[in-house]
Image (tube, rainbow, N blue to C red; front, side, top):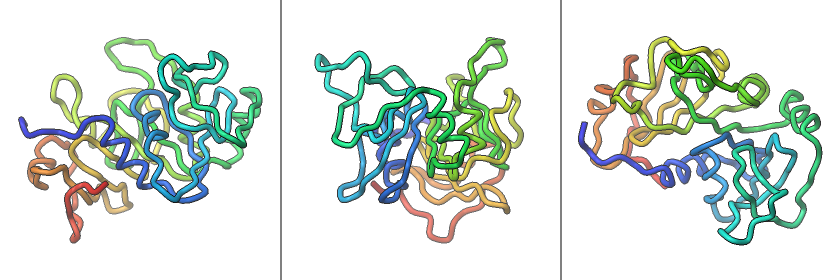
Length: 221
């Protein structure tokens, strides 16, 4: 499929539109960390990190970094008024206590039931699950931000995950470079497609059968 796909920043922008005013949000390593750059105007989103910081701003500009102020991916953060600092045990207690409204994670695979696999590739045989397992169990809502296919062009949205699971039935919404898909009890619901793409195009690179939302539209930012 040679049609143009959305870049990582646009995926992050679309995910940011899902965040409600006052949400406590944890951003996973990789593409999800970009979401803090695109808080919709007029909304207050309180970002949390396992590294022990709450209510941080966007990524810091190059050359102005505080080496002690980082997110879970080791990226430097812009300090903002009202930031709070604490140890990792307290950070994980917030996750396990159910205080995180939304978690945004990347994924190697997501199943049609919302199972998440994001910590180990089978051919590597090694990986680090980090805080992802806690977030899969503790966050009230899980959004996955990822490319729709892997580096070989194979589907990452599958009937059943073949990689080790991070969590079962934990994913609520999938935002990719070609589609926005909701995980529902009746299966995967295709809600939005990238410009120039059709539902049939998305189905061609998706393993499970997609249901098509009656209001299917182009991805809106």
